[in-house]
Image (cartoon, rainbow over all chains, first blue to last red; front, top):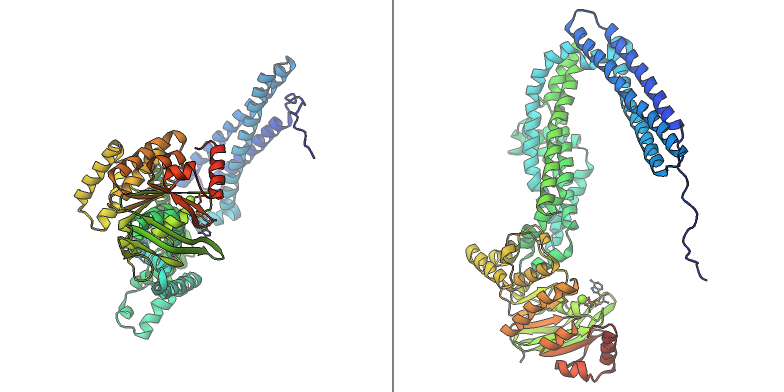
Length: 363
Length: 247
Ligand SMILES: Nc1ncnc2c1ncn2[C@@H]1O[C@H](COP(=O)(O)OP(=O)(O)OP(=O)(O)O)[C@@H](O)[C@H]1O
Ligand SMILES: [Mg+2]
């Protein structure tokens, strides 16, 4: 059987430019503008005139109402380009027609993309304003925010302390577990087995249960030294146990991702298994696992909020005191914001690390 | 007794036997070339000698001492027998000079200063002293392979194994690597090398072994093997090489 290899002979199609897309862009933009104006109006009418919050809303509302008009620009530009494409097509200038058509479509999509974003904001604001501001008052009451943020932030230091200490220990503990898990030879087998059981167990058990068992169990059992730990240190101990298992798996995936030829090269020079791990394998593995490592660390940081089950006073405990005294959750919003605030710089930091590493490696 | 002596070496991966009883003797200052088709077991033989693979049967002797089997300190042995791989395998997270000094430093062969001085001397000899602080992926393939040779030499091995060290290189980079091997041969380093570069084998080899299905089918001086092989299979193999324009 032979398959004929003939070049395709059909001509490339003439560019056409539909009017539907730019028209849809304009309609979407007009609807968005209407929605934003309506919401801005509701924002203003919902607060009493004369308060400083009213002034704030006034500024925000006006800015939004004026700013949303910027959406008209791409929408109108799209229509104009559509006109030019039609003209070019009329005079048989195919290249110009394609260029204008492409600009027409791009602008239409830009207009609709930004409109979608604006509508999303409108939806959130509407949600906050719903039920006569009830949502906003519950989660973002200005009075409660200014009353609780300082004490809550102070208590947040406990979360930061627990997280930082646990992370430092986890870095080492996780690596030890990962290395133990891949211990070679007959002598290494029992070590590897134990490490695997540990990792399986502590990855399976919910962190909150480990914290509970450690925080209440050890003192109850009167274990020497361990039972006299403060709740904060119990929390550190418990989180280390749990996240050590996660981080061990992260390290292990990094170690296994290093090509066996690296091991062969190092061993062929006479380096021992341990020396090879230390000088050749682990340094390369660690570089690769920084992003997933950060993932686990962010998880650990968030789990510091679980320590309230054993009576450690952290930001969440503090916020809950406010919340139950005033039937208002604004203080808890503060805690949520604090967690976001500490996470963002870490993400940026890791991005920078990776970038620098790639630059140095000349890629 | 020869300097490096291999007797009845066998190696299987599961069911497939890759080495079916290798006997080989390499005298001091000799350069022995292994030739043979792809899959004939050249790499496996070299890796077995360096004990990167465990052997099933047979013995390896170095300078009269049995260096294979139970109770042998492989780390010690590997300081005496260096190996260079087809794919360079430099450590990408270390500069060139650190690649070269790692083993001497870690194995207390030399003080860090001494190791570094020696490394730079060696790099100077192969014309790479200017790139001593570069990282491997900033070097060309030929340069990387030259560094890999120097890295093996830094341990001052008594035997050097070379496993097709030019087959991953662009043709114009082959010469710079072979030049170094040529020079090492002139200096009297004992070498055992697997190669597809027949004209090079013909030039530097004291003796050439033709491997076929895990056995050394024929061994002799290069002139004899390349011009007047006795075995039909050797003739076949060389014929194919000539047809491919590689001889
Ligand atoms: N780790 C392994 N597991 C299973 N089989 C293997 C392994 N390594 C090598 N082999 C097999 O052993 C045989 C010999 O391989 P080897 O790499 O020694 O050949 P070679 O002569 O070096 O070939 P080439 O010229 O292609 O490098 C091949 O058939 C290969 O498939
Ligand atoms: Mg090979």
